[in-house]
Amino acid sequence: MLECKQLTFEYADGAVGITDIDFSTARGNIIGVIGANGAGKSTFFKCLLGLLKPQSGTLLHQGNPVTYNKKSLRQLRQSINLVLQDPERQIFYSDVYDDVAMGPRNLNLPEVEVDRRTMACLEQVQAKAFMDRPIQYLSFGQKKRVSIAGILALSCDVILLDEPETGLDPVMRNEMLTLIETLSKQGKKIILSSHNMDMIYHICDYVYLMHQGKIMASGDVETIMTNEQQLKATRLELPMLVKISKSLNKSPDELKQTLKMF
Image (cartoon, rainbow, N blue to C red; front, side, top):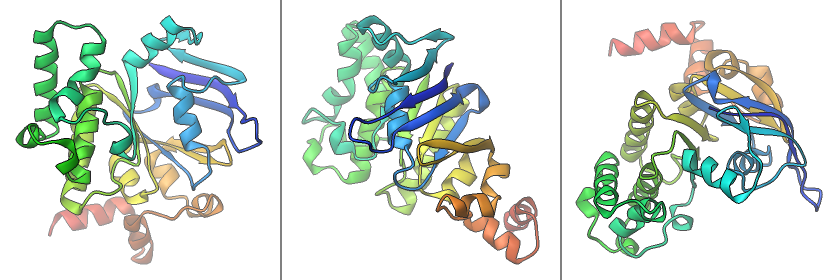
């Protein structure tokens, strides 16, 4: 489990960081972190990874405070890792196989286990078909799959996804949603940041709403994503399904059931 208590990080130049953040992966299986640009989502993710050391508060991993020494951070990052919005920033090798295999090799695993993990993860993200192609010839969506496979190969318990649907066409976006749901069913905790309110409403079971570095609200997805006044106050919009349900004077659940009939 990953959690933090009153976590605060301030940038030296005065830029918005995070203030008194309370968070726990025990709240949900697929957790959404939403907020407008500058809300502090990226800073928060970096703090969860131990990339930024907070000035106050506590980050806990499996109930133990992270101490920010080399051993503590290594243990943290073997359990939690991040898939960046831009896969170009996460791919280091010129061929697919070696890039996905890099993490397990850095853990000094036997080559047989490295190969088993690499091939299994490539298959899980549907990337085996282009595993022999040079990275520079892959599409943005294919590179995204490679970057996800590289994180999966580390066998993390918690996966952070930064804007996972950005740059994907509709087919690949649906495949991404299916992958996220599959990983959750396999026992992975998923924490995702997104501006796509429709995706958050569709896939998350718990949501944290951030604004100006603070958690303004948290709760089950239905509670947070149907509160129009609260979302507007933080420069966000209602999900489309909720908007339509309001215009038809129906509950979102009623509309979902109606749509299933077609």
